[in-house]
Length: 366
Image (cartoon, rainbow, N blue to C red; front, side, top):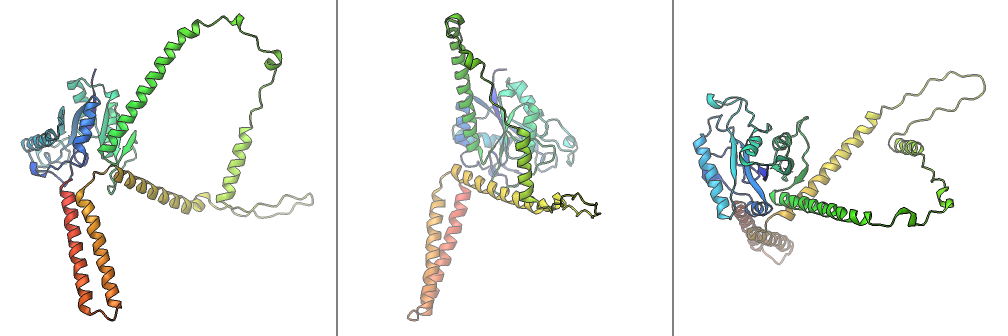
């Protein structure tokens, strides 16, 4: 097998997902998709879309209508100078209403059927390929096919992971960051190959080195020097465990036994570690989730595409806030009349409506 590929989910990976898409006019490319796919093509990857389309089994649309939707998707990408190598879909679902498509199928993700079919038809080396999608179904299908995987962890979208779902190899906030990850992986692979090649070139030079007899012998004093004593790892681990226990669980210590006559004492009950650590575990999980969301939003902003509408929205929002401040100032100023206050409030409301319109235009042009 000679080709490598990037398998791509469709909805919320290449195009926005309003629900079940039933008409080509609903197909909207996500920001930066065309540029990202162009870079993947330049890196030598085949571009293969693999998508579950249970709407066919549910009677929402036909396969002919689905073909028109995918034809429009290809046209939108062609307008940006990039072409898909193949599109595979699974129309089956066990809870469908159309008898022909109401069944289980190996093509349906998380099963790897679509990826295996593409590998056979397009001569793809799955071990050199990647699966990119926004759900753990995509990640599971990629792992079962033998691909590496990237999960698109879009801000604001909750990822539902079952117990048996594998973890992705990488995470990204959108397709643009996923491409940067692949470029970094390829750079590291090329660097490792270059180091290995240099190592092979140095072996003949090492063989031509002078024999061991010509090398000065090491002095006996150095040879007989005893090796440094290894640190007692058991003692360190014990001390570390003790310090952690003292930090999180404060327990009363029983008094040492006296040599005098034994006195019967009732042992004090030990606090349950789980109960003591439960609030701390909850707080730690909450802090980790907050930190993850902050990092994700920061990365999303970094890879978000610049928009003139968004810039204008921020400027108009600042003017609206300034108008509200002026209205409060006029209200506190006895020399100003009620009309001045109402005028400033009217300006603030009008500017805020303009902000909403700019944001809607920004979303429409994504």
